[in-house]
View (cartoon, rainbow, N blue to C red):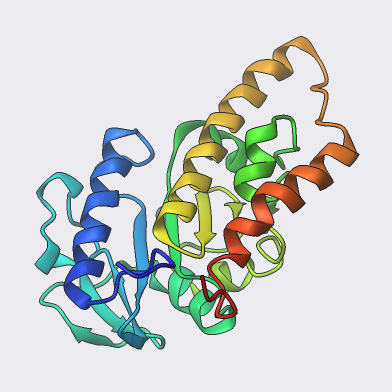
Length: 230
Ligand SMILES: [Zn+2]
């Protein structure tokens, strides 16, 4: 594992994707074969490791994780990559700062995505993990390039967004960060839906949102950038 949290080798990337796939299932962020995870590979700048389509996470093995190039062509692997591959490849092509992507189908976030609700910055943790409140990307049919393109704007200054009528998409400089963002979105979405039963939900004060962004969220990205020599 390199300093940035990006796995160095193909095998390390495959093992990391399996580890976090198991967590997805254990933490109820997906059902059965839904959702997907990918990471860049440090030693192979043009390749990413991604979960296969229609494979149950509990039986997933490192060799099941597919290696693809940034155009989505399979480089190595006996299984097909997830049908939602454009969500991954488009982001990697557009954003050199994105090291990993986690797509979940978690219950509270799906309820919000179904209703087309945005998630305001109602809790400190959301701002620290995602950079502020997050929005829902416009509707597009699943597994299309369009669905992936619609996430570019909501993710421009955030680590996550909701996909209308679908689920959550989280990005990060590495899997740890992207996975954490996906978890926090689910927790805060659940809190938001409960709190709304009591009326309008107060937000974290604006100046504190800026402070948390600057002190906690931005360093998580900046420290992983190419300029970091530590
Ligand atoms: Zn999906």
